[in-house]
Structures are given as structure tokens and as C-alpha cells.
Length: 463
Image 1 (tube, helix red, strand yellow):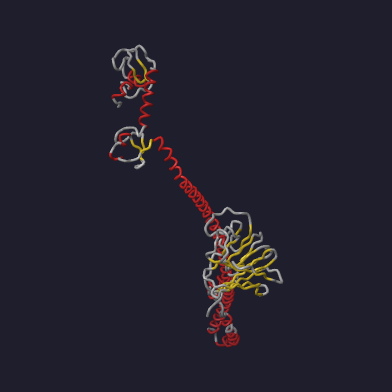
Image 2 (spheres, helix red, strand yellow):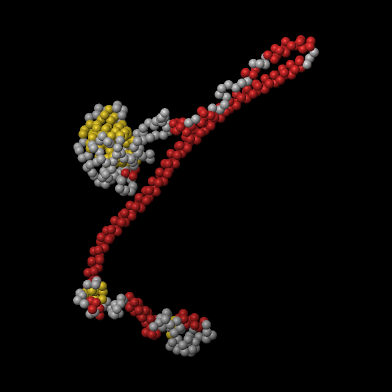
């Protein structure tokens, strides 16, 4: 509902600011839509105010009134946007430097702002804009950092999903091999059982058939003998000798019909230690590698194999920059660390032209270069050497080119030895008092992979 000051700009029908005002011959004005709706409900086109009949069905738009209404609305909008003092309803022309808030002229003279300093709004605003702009700089910098972190997290999430799917596929492949082995082993053992069953059933059948023939012959002999027993004495005595000989011929037949040993199914052979025997046989298809590489630590230019036993140089990969990953060294470390005992593993270096193998401490700096915490043997530019950072490298004068290196770590005694397993020759020994966990590692930039070699799997029985 419009206020009293707005009456001159209000339609008598809707009592709101004119929208497309039209004027009748009686000089009264209305909204075009309001007048049309009014006339639809009336039998005559008359003025809603004075009831005078209008001669115009389509009265003209009053452009003057339309412009006045638009100007009035714009002024209302301007006033609505103008912020006034909440206490005195006056324009806020000053800025109190003590309270850090805009005030009106009346506020300046009030007790609340006694002895306060003021500045005109148009002078205070630019200065405070500059201050606020300055405070935004670190916020924007923080925002950029957070956005970069968000990007890294998003990239990491995508990589986790890819890793999960790849790992799932590899797990399924491994179990498919195991399932195939077990199925084939089951089929072979069922076939052996079936073969033994058929052989022993055939033996029983042959004996039963022979026994049937013998039973028929024996029954015939018994009937003949009983008949002779009922004969006259002379006839009985005439045939006595032949009848006795016929009876005597039947006695050995009983022994031939008996079953020998091993006639039953050898259940012990088929079921005895079944799971152990299958497990023992599975070692032919199972390998054990003493060091498994951790792909989450690999340098972006190292490619780790699916079974995580070898690595080679390659094109730079798009991988997350997680804390464990090496960015300055072309390194991938083992997945398990050592802090006691003795450990041995072999690395096949083959024809690789550059490699480094050894151990490093758990606290080794993965981001950027470091000078401590690494013990290694390396091959570079055709020369072999060994070193313990930060000490200088020791040249190794070897008579033959190495294909494999055996590393033996005695953590408790502080020894890391390198040897040639093909000739059982000691190459070098590094000594140090270890206090941290140690991770095996391999490093190369060559396309020829370095391989952690599997060890022989043995199944032993304790008595």
C-alpha cells in the first residue's frame, strides 16, 4: 500500500505506483491493465472514480505521468541505497578514526565521540581501501597455496583410484594362477583315484567271473556226487574212483579265488598330507623376493615393474608429489626397513651403464639433495666405486664386469658388504654404527632395469 507522499503517483484501482498509465477524457488516470480488468467486470466502459462513461475503448498512455512515475521510482531506489545514521537518520559524512566507523555530523558532537578524531568519508575511504588491499595480499597468497594443495590432493585421489584398480587387477591375476594350479592338481588327483578304482574294480570283476565259473563247476560236482551216493552199491562202487578224483580236483580252486594284498583303494596315498603335498608342489610356481620396491617412493623418471622387483629409467611420469617420493635422486627404496639382524639380497645389474645400490636411513632427505645417511656401491662411466655419504668414494679395481651384486647387511655389527655371487668374491665392506632403520634402495637412469632377484623357496619338515 503506497504512503501519503506517493498518492499523486498511485493508481486509484491498485493503489500502487502507476504501471503504463492511461488517461480518460475525464482526466482521471489508471494503470492500463487495472482499467482493462475493471471494464471486463462492468457492462459499460465508465471511469472507476467519477463513473463518467468513456468514449475511448483504448485510452492513450500519459507519457508525462509515465516519466514522472519512473523518476519517482528511481529516486526511491536511490534513497533506499543511501545509508543513513541509525541514531539520527542523517547522512554519514564523517569517519571516526577512534571507533573506525562512519558517523553523521550530529554524532560528532555527541558525548559518545568526545575528543575523537574524524576524517571526511571521501578522504578516509581511499586510505582504508589501501590498507585493506594490503591485508588481502597474504590472504590471496594463502588462497593460491591452498588451491595448489587442493590440486595436489585431487591428483593424489585420482592416483589412489588408479593404484587401487591396478592392484585389484594384479591380485586377480595372481589368484587366477593359483586357482588354475589347484584346479589342475584336483583334476590330476581325481583322475588318479578314478584310475585306481577302475583297475581294482576290474580285478574284482575278473575274480568274480572266474569264481562264478568255479561255483557252477563245484555245484555240478556236488550234484553228481549226491546222485552217486543214491545209486545201487555195484553202480556206486563202479563210479567211486572217478567221483573221488572229481572232488579232489575242486580243492585248489578256493585258494585261487582269494584276494591278495592291496585290493582296496589306497586312501592314505590319496589323502595323506594332502594339503602339505600340494603346498610343497606349489613352490615350483611360487617365487620369493627378499626386497620388494615401494612405487610410492620412486623418482618421477623411474619406472617400477608391476611385480615391484625391478626399476628402469624412463619418461617423466605424472605422479603425486607425496612426502615419500624422491625428487632429486633417481631412487626407489624398498618397502620394508631393517633395524636389527642380518639380511641378504641380490641385484642383477646386467649391462646397465649406470647404477647405484645400497641402503639409506629412514630420515634420508627425499626432497632436494642431502649429504648424509646413504651407503652405496655404484657403477659410473665404466668404473666401480663404494662410498658412505659424506665420505669420498673408494675406487674398486675389479678384474671382471659384474652381472650380479650380493648385498649383506649386518645391522647389529654395523657392516654392509658387497660381493660377487657368481664367484663368491668379496668386493667391498662399509662399516658404520647404525642407529636408524635402514631401507634398501636401487638407482639408475638406464633403460636396462635393475632387478632384485628371487631366492629359492624351500619347504622343510621338522621332526
